[in-house]
Amino acid sequence: MKAPRALARFNKRVTNPIQSTYAPHLAPWAVITHVGRKSGQTYRTPVVGFRSGSTFAVVLFYGPESDWVRNVRSAGSATITRRGRDLTWSNLRVVPADTAGLPRAARTLGGAARPVLVGDLS
Image 1 (cartoon, rainbow, N blue to C red):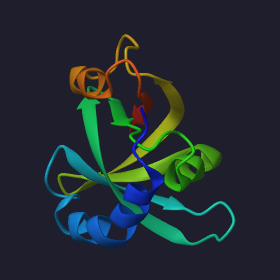
Image 2: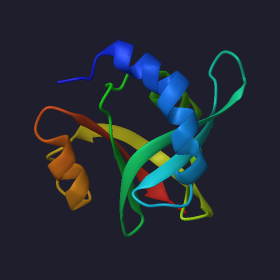
Image 3: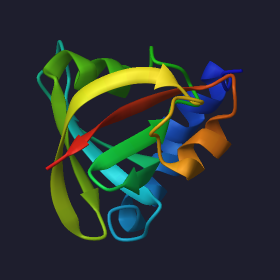
């Protein structure tokens, strides 16, 4: 089940600016830097993500139609800042949370109903 869009709008305007101060430094948070598909503007979106080896996964609480998800999928890659390090996130795909090979925390948090955006770090 997706979270309500009203909550997404609130988080975008209120919660995300606060989280952006600590998310690039404190796991499991991270900041995804991406470029708008239409505007060309650079955005920084805080997320909760999980890493296993070179795989990084974000549970999509608002679904795969969220702007930031559409932006990174359209671009084919994004930059993830986590624990103070910038990494390239590529080979992006949306999969069910019960997909084998996902980080365990992503499978648990996603449950059976939520999709996960997963990609490779380099």
